[in-house]
Image (cartoon, rainbow, N blue to C red; front, side, top):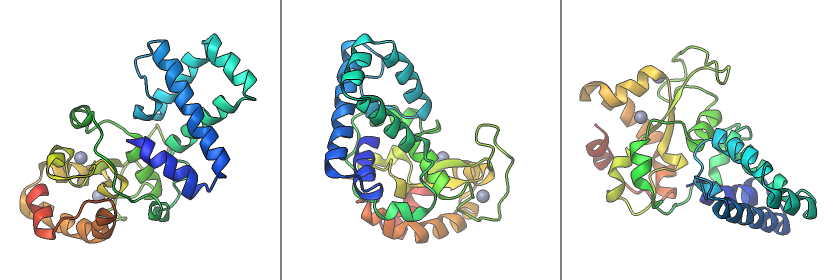
Length: 232
Ligand SMILES: [Zn+2]
Ligand SMILES: [Zn+2]
């Protein structure tokens, strides 16, 4: 869930002052209350999974008199907090994988794991951020090519959970974390889902080696053998 990452991001990556951090987080709590009071279908901004959802919420909030009044009296603090969350979701500051040095930590398993499983292939903020940090390259081999995406005008790649979310029950911490998401060209992505074992293992071995330490930092401590058992 992005709430865990967002708090850490504004504290440790953006290094905002503690008072600003508290203002931003407090404002999001207040906005969640307005969404709940108005029976908006998404009642928690941190449960939003794409940046498009956040844009829809802003349009909705702007129609609320309570929101407009609150924001006016708060010197635009509420819209600033929402825009900062949107900036995080847009992934624009995820310019290199070094950013994950501050963001790999064990994340509690989200309650709605079931919905995450059914929607595994949809776009998500976490996948978008990983793809940006990987410079839109395939992490199996940066020489792999693809076409230009009309949505991003960059090379088209897809985010993939290295250990599938369906295996969540075997792990005490969330698998929907940066360390477990890789950026792949569409061919490699299909390979992981559809290829025969012998053709998958070469790339699985390589990706496990590059992600092992980060997976451990995220509370996902798994041997190479166990990893292959769950992913081949
Ligand atoms: Zn996948
Ligand atoms: Zn590839």
